[in-house]
Amino acid sequence: MTNVQSSLPRLCDAHSRGVSYLRFSVTDRCNLRCVYCRGLGKESVLPHGSLLRYEEILRLVRVFRGLGVGKVRLTGGEPFARRDCAALIMSLRSSFPDLNLRLTSNGTLLRPHIGLLKEARVDAVNLSIDSFDRETFRELTGFDLLDEVVAVLEGLLAAGVRVKVNAVAMRGVTDRQLPSFLEAVTRWPVDVRFIEFMPMGEGTVWDAGRFLPAEEIMRSLGTMAELVPVPDAHADHGPARMYAVPGRQGRFGFITALSNHFCDTCNRLRVTSDGSLRTCLFADTMTPLRGLLRDPAVTDEDLARVIRQALADKPVGADLLKARKETAVARGRMASIGG
Ligand code: SAM
Image (cartoon, rainbow, N blue to C red; front, side, top):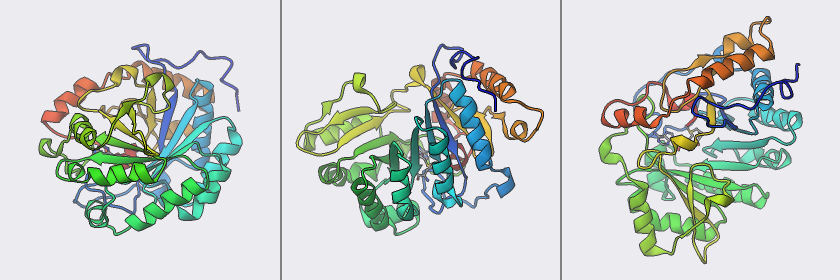
């Protein structure tokens, strides 16, 4: 394999934003049916042959590493719904010992892999827990699995793996449950991050009435506990604005994709489960990489060139998003895009 690290300058887009973070949706399959993501309709999943093979993911990581990408997240769908995801994690770690390697998971299939995540020195696991109330969790996801996810959260912490909790903010749901999120940061040393509900994904139940701005959550939480801003200078929290909660072990974070976008500092790229490069969450334009990866004539340098070209067109997504707020959601499925 050619070493592209030394021969190419760092990856930058046309708006001078550096790109250092890559997310892979390793499968579009998921064992849950979260209303904000998959909706209530029928859905189809990709045939196995359309997914990127693990060696193709490793090769892409190698090429992106050469372009200056230092952080990789595996997401989905549910990463552990794909067979041998654990093997992919180990291969990534052994091939790239200093890679900042992370995972986003619903946690329901994760319990047997806790030891491996520790062994692989995974830098953080983001668990999606949209409610700490068992019945609400069941209504949102379709499954009565909150207890299992909480056991996994505690198992990860006991193993010394850093955990963050992602909660999609929904009016009528999240706003009624803030005391239980406060209890979560009291019980566990975790960052609970509220993600504004985005008009994304075919079949999502998104509508303006369900949108709950982060500001509103922050105001309500502020009546229950003191929130102390964590300076961005200490950032390891991407676009989340973080707040410490004195006297509690955990912190709160707010990801304001709609109410206060962070497109001007966007440093991320996504590879969809069928192997396309998506430079902006809100733009449906994608660059297919799978065919190139399977063409023996295509070298790593060719791939790097294609990636750079795609980067040149990476939009500032806020305007696209503004239009979507009023009208339709993005065409792609979140499970394939990876969130
Ligand atoms: N199955 C994994 C999980 O549940 O975390 C990974 C896939 S999920 C698509 C990745 C992230 O996308 C989750 O944190 C989820 O909360 C978020 N997400 C999905 N649809 C969303 C939407 N419409 N608005 C905001 N966040 C969304």
